[in-house]
Amino acid sequence: MPGTVLLLAASPVGKGCLVDAASVLPVLAAVAPPVLSGTDTANVVELADPLEPQAVLTRLRAAATASGPLTMFVTGQLQLDRRQRLPHLALARTTPSTVRYTAFPWRWIADELRLRPPGSTTVFVDLHADADTWEFIASRPLTAGPSAELYGRVAPPPGRRAVAQPAYMRAVATLLRSGHRPPPAQLHQQALTRVSGEGSARPGAEDRVLAPGRAWAGRPWPPAPEFTTVTAPPGTAPGPPPRPPVPPDVVPAPPAPPVSPVSMAVPVAPVVSVLPTSSTVPVAAVPVAAVPVAAVSRGPSVPSPASSGRTEVRVGPAVPDPHGEITEAVRDGRHDDALALAGRWERDALRTHGAGSEQVLHWMEVRADLAMFAGDAERSCRGWLALAATRLDAGQDPGAPEVESAVDRAHHQWGRVQDPGRARELGAELAWLRRRVPGRREGALDHVQRQLSQLGTQA
Image 1 (cartoon, rainbow, N blue to C red):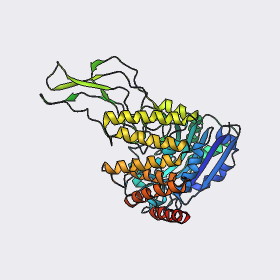
Image 2 (cartoon, one colour):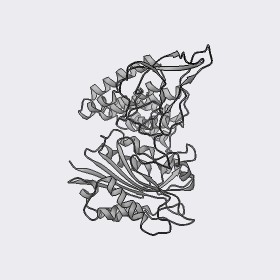
Image 3 (cartoon, rainbow, N blue to C red):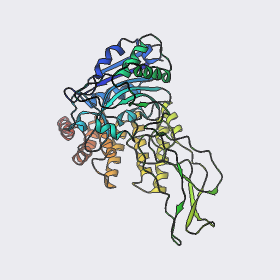
């Protein structure tokens, strides 16, 4: 089966440039495509200093949906947008004040790769961060989603008025030019050895290294769960156990096996999500979105006879995870079965948790995604519109990433609706949402209004 290779090198033009990212592309391009991919044949897509984040997204989405192994080589610099404080890959037109509009959000990478089969995606990165971003990511390691293996480094900013070289990616390319492609972990380690042995002024000792299972900033990732008990004043109903703050996109440990109901202290595991636009709901390590159920279901709380005012939580049998079955249905082309299964879980979540709950929102998101994979642009658009409206009605900020992402996806799917009447109907609702959620790109509302005007003329 042919593989796909995406070469992406991006950095700002002018004094904001921290790394000469594009300089590594000729070295990578000199490597035979099968060696880059590790397959007999491969298609190579090269993006050198792209100008628009949507152009990068289009190429990434096409690569992510291709069958066969996918290998990405990403070189560039990271910057934070000033509003949401999220890391972005700076593009050619990016400046510190325009990151939100001209750079590529890093979370989009995990978002697009989330449904790829585990073990089929490898990402090599050589990134430099400005001072603000370097401090930010100290406690928030980068990921590429649960289905992708991420290797590489993030380097601190170079000296004043200096432009760094992508030494790690150049070492990877040089090793591959020999015609031999070792396993990714071995290739990564050999490249690190070359970088550290170059004898440069800053040989990479401060770099933060990315590799599966590696500690970041001196501590394991994700953090180990803490065992706690719930303490409540005598005579009052116990509340839920406290949950620690959790970084996004962390792949949790495999869920615990089913256990018989026993009285025990419950480990409070981090609340994680493998889908950036999903909400904080406990998940299992699966290739589809987030799982709205924990590895164990909590039964009723009972007073502990050992001490007054302390409560222990009763643990019930494990709840099955439906995402694996949904993924298999999509891969087999049984899109109706996948949508029906997701619909049943959404109805169960509605009965259990109520409208507007994070569990219900999650399944709305899954169904909108499944409709997209089924090629039903109208249903997908309706799903994203409904999700965005529900989040806004629940009081979420119009600038929240989850809200913006839902409206952006609805906009994208709306452009693929072929029936003019349905397009006019959906466009009116999209225009209403765009007035409240203008999104990251300027002119989104104007685009909707122009398209609606054309549709009206056709009618």
